[in-house]
Picture 1: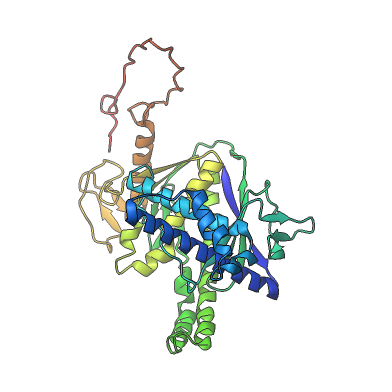
Picture 2: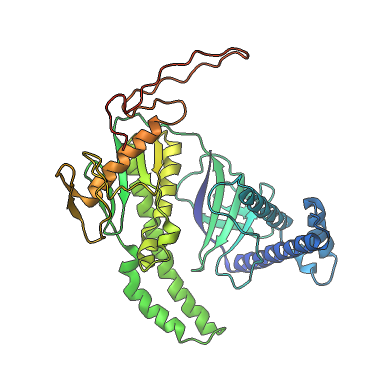
Length: 414
């Protein structure tokens, strides 16, 4: 599997200028290539081949007076810009045709020099790792890297990123081997929320750190100062950095905390189940700031990535599962409840429930049922999962095996 290892880099004053020049040239090549493809499509619905496009916007453009300065930067970074444009188009068409899962992606857009985040990519021909620990970039020089850990393998590419706060990072793509952890018996359901970040089915509660809320007081003052500056002035640019740096610090602390929480959950549990929350929809409500601060989407992504690497399973139950309405003891659906109701009593069996703890236990049961009822597994939630069937020779037909359903075994299905 491929992972990204990101490190802070410290370019010199001259390398700052060279990086800015490379950022600008890669952006111009991307925009020229996108304009050429759009013009060809509007003219006769044709598509320009990648090689012909690179020759037009890079090789031939260098010979003109308007684009002669493209020769001052690495051609590898310019070619990577065209490859990234091809990947963006491929992702768009795969999304439109349904081959790519997730939200539908839009067409590639033109890049602006006013974007606060800039990036360039180098393939193996454009960078080299020196013996002294420095990163050599084509036509930029040897850049100092803050190595926090060794790379597990030789990187296939590196992306140099300048974020909104003015920091520079080098992001390496490396290939790593899976590191399966010893199997454990524990499985857990996770109910995400805002009052508590997560309530586990085993009774553990992870408190919500609210990193953005903690920094709001300092950010409020900085943003008020920024709003009073004249747009386009140098003082506004300085004030923008004063606002961007606390935001970057909040993002770094939140990311570090999410890494620690997710790896701990993966180490302690063999299977983890959580609900498929509509984060994008919740982010458009009056709770938008708190939802963004919680970063549920990143939590799920990190959990799935670490589980894949360490041989664990992550199950996602449907968002339409009434986890807050269903009794985890008798499975009686008790109806909708306002958010301020945190403790309720089941009308079916009379059991008193904590809203979040009961929801996590319902998610655990639903996730286990979905996992065992998956193709190739038994239908009954508590039936043992059989070993994978041996391949059958072509032309033969295996005898059908009797299947015991959960209803036949006397086990509730919900």
